[in-house]
Amino acid sequence: MTQDGPVREARFVRKPDGAPDGGVHNLFVVSGRNDGTADASGCALTQPDFALQQALGNVILRIPTPVFGAGLIEQIPDSAITANQAANALTKRAYGISGRPQSGRQRRADLPLRLEGAEPISAAVRG
Image 1 (cartoon, rainbow, N blue to C red):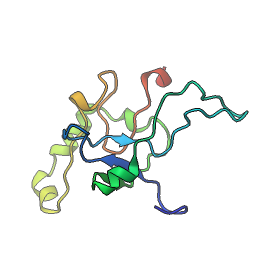
Image 2: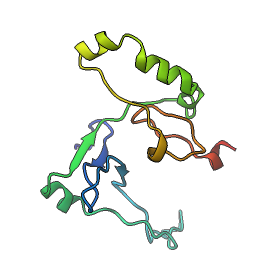
Image 3: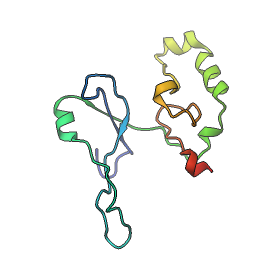
Image 4: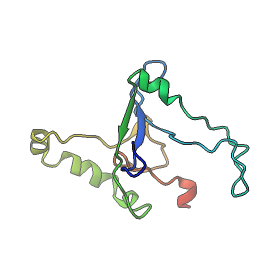
């Protein structure tokens, strides 16, 4: 990563118990911050040990899909996402295009399907 490079997100390949992870992990946290502009002294979030995880070959850095206009991706109906996934399957496979919408245990039940790399806005923020 570089200071003027693209935005990156860090994902771990495996959880400590060996189960698949794939979740986005915090590159930065504000735990304990209280500098007059904000008070996060009650924040209990911890930053993962990236040095250890990198030494174990367990970190994948990805460039997330930029989504400008918060919430626009959530306006795509679940049916459109799954239909697009199924359309032209042979051609997509020939070009190595693959993926799956997040569903089931991978997402909160109160949020719609989403495209990989596009973080949803929580129900509390959406109102």
